[in-house]
Structure formats: structure tokens, C-alpha cells
Image (cartoon, rainbow, N blue to C red; front, side, top):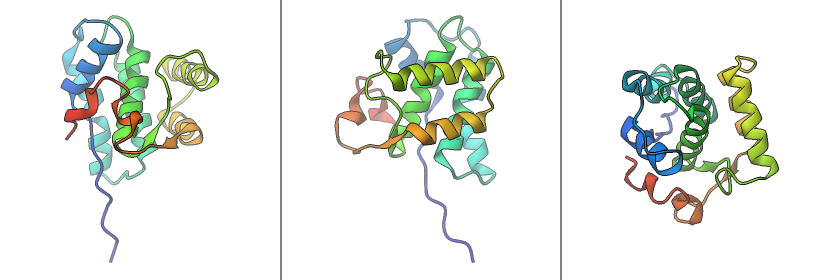
Length: 153
């Protein structure tokens, strides 16, 4: 008999849109359907057996980057969404979003690699795994994006 799956929390399209508007620019997605497809990709992968939170974050970021739902800022929102997804599931990628530091520069390079199809979602997931650190659910890490994750269900 297999052990029960660890429950994960997933972002909604509305939450990603809110994150985009609060951190990137106050624009709506130019293609809402492809944003929805990207945001629900991790849930679909989880439904079919993928339990690794880093793999799911990689899928989320890759889909947002390649689906190109926004006119501008797709790599940035992919990073923010992946970081928020990991935070609500116990890890963080960034201490301060978009700060000039080696972690953020590495993340920028990684997301460019996905956009140019040099890296896959799996390679991005491995990179995330190599730099992620655990978060305290009720600490500063939880609230870094101005409460965007507060209504995550």
C-alpha cells in the first residue's frame, strides 16, 4: 500500500494576476486563457502523480514564460509566481524580489534560458532546488509580496 500524498497548495489565476499588478505593472493579461492554462499546469501535473514541489514550480514558470500571456514581464511574473508557489509550500527562492544579488542574477539567467528553450522545466526545477531555502510559514518570508499570498487556498 502506498503512503498518502503530501497535500500541496496551488496559486489561482486571480492570484497570479494580482501578483503581476502589484509587482510588475498594472496591466491585465493580453491572453487570459493562456495564463489560466499556465497557472493550472502544476495542478494537472500533480493530479497525474508529480509530487515534487520544485518540479511543479518549474512547470509553472516554464508555462508562464512560454505561453506569453502578458505583453511584457512574462519572465518576471514567472519568477514571482514560482517563488510564491514555493513559499506557500515551504521554500523560498529570493530574499528580496529583484534585488541586485547573485541569487536573483542566477534566477534571471535561468529564466532567460527557459525563454530561449535552452533549459527545460526539469532543469529549471533542479536549479530552484539548488538555491531554495526553507521558510517560516508565519515569518517575514510569508508576507514579502505585500500579502498577495494571504488568501492562497
